[in-house]
Image (cartoon, rainbow, N blue to C red):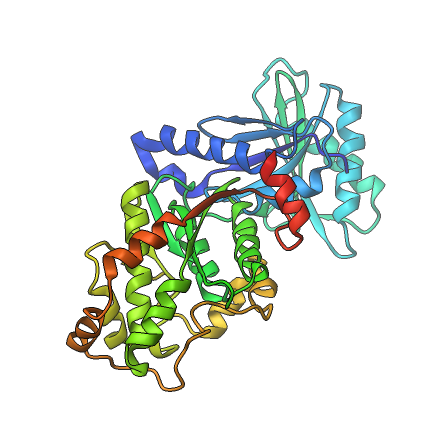
Length: 405
């Protein structure tokens, strides 16, 4: 079926009262950015619905992208025909045939905003339904609980037919809840946490620590590729890479083994907060799940959080690993996350880290470090990239070319 537009329903945005205009405008802007690589597509965000005109673009990849945009509750691919009842018959038959399986039922539901159209809603329901029944043997009518509901919308500029309702990502448009800084590793949990934060409207910037030569360019590319997957929900995400080699080497040489992890995480959090203050971030997000590893006990969290008063939000904190993995698979980050590239969080991990570190000891060991100097040099080496949908960071030549555009 060659669909001509996609009709988008807002869902939760309808509860926003006087602020709904701002939310819809943000959703419209996010949708334009998310579909930037479909040049013929046009987006019209209105108060009750958003209309995405395809203008000959293949609908399948557009539908897949729309499904990922936060703030969209449901959407339907639509075919527009002229105000010609014979065209309506032919399109309705083709549309139902594509979905029909033996034993299915259907009904026709008509909306007629153009009152000058010669047939009223009852007549359209009856005549279109009759033509479809005649054309598809075995199909039956069920007006209360049909398997397929054919919607016919008679407007001034044509007649619009749809029969599919696809569930969207839901939530709020990214950018309506302020900016957050996501501490993104290459693992399973942090991309899921970023996704859940973005779903509530957070404009997320990814902060990734890398430690060459202990971590490779492939590990950095993997983190960018995870960001690329998430960027499909919003069109573009800032990726902030912070060099961490000197800090890790200094900590390993200076701090007792049991506190290596605690002090490293404290430094990571300090650096992330410094970037947040520079870039207008309001909170730090991470992928910690309570009790999952040594650094995610209550005692460890308290010892690490001690370095900042900025809010730290953990969207997956109460989830089991199996729950996190299920979400990761649904949002297409899982296969990337399990690629076996090294992570700076694990390269100097001690065999027996403290699961209940003492806060005063963590502070004491940090006094052996030149914290200000280490942070200044790390921040001087920060690189910020804009990650957009469609870039293949796992193949460097393509990534370099894309960043030159």
